[in-house]
Length: 392
Ligand code: PMP
Ligand code: GLN
Image (tube, rainbow, N blue to C red; front, side):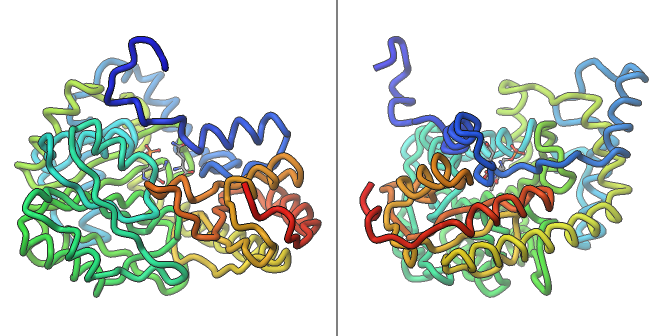
């Protein structure tokens, strides 16, 4: 037991991303575990950040974010969703989506309130709810097609339910939620007067014919939804941590009350650089999607050849691959083996279930250079099916 640690942290372990990245480094494994690009971010955005630093835009930004970036977010929403945002009242720039998520939960959840979280989930959601004194209620998406279990969702809603945490496109499963599913969630939220916190950080990373729809744009949802995004994913600069939350004025005001005391403001020159990114970044986005589509195809093929059950995801830069045909039922044991013996690190998705549920799947990230995927593919080709490693 760590001396002086507050009770509310007792059940939080080290993030699986930190753990697997450390293990990958220790064993010099190819890191397809933590989601981040291993290639350089775009020069035009890095130049814009340097220009902002040299122009001495280096003091505190306004707490809600620099106005040019809020204007650029509004232009992006107008372009993509035909929705006009109020630049003064409806946009908050945060230090990554991570801050926006905690700020959103703290903004709306009272101690004892229940929050619905779909499993598998992004690992920050349960700690965010617990730090607010809330109670997570889990609804499991059934593999292999991960369709919304409407009746389970309905059954999870009680008079104490305050909010639903949604993630589309979804990490780790790569699903882009359909309009029909979002309508079902929206109708339940309206019926039970719930807030929806919608994590849409992968909104631009979608493939083929998939269409991303913000739930906030559905009828009756604007006044009850906080939409969260992150420029880090769209522009391959995850370390800059420039995220944002978009919501109707009363929800934005609540979120900003938290944000002003959590970080007050995010790095000014990096915010300024993201104005250039959002306004001029569509050519980059198109190129990035084409690049990721090729990496996705290569990784899916390598995994399939190695004996995994795998389908190409509709969005995000993650692939879920079923390792059971290879003789592995315990994903933690399998990921340790893959990292330490085979030399390819991956994430065990049981970390994304409150009870450590074993879906049989392993998560791999394809936001990597062609040579990284090729090197991982040669190692995966050496994988031998086994029936001797099925216990952890
Ligand atoms: N939500 C999801 C689903 C994510 O995958 C990530 C990526 N780490 C985040 C939130 C956090 O985003 P950021 O790096 O901008 O804090
Ligand atoms: N979002 C990244 C992932 O899912 C990790 C971010 C982090 O390490 N906190 O891999």
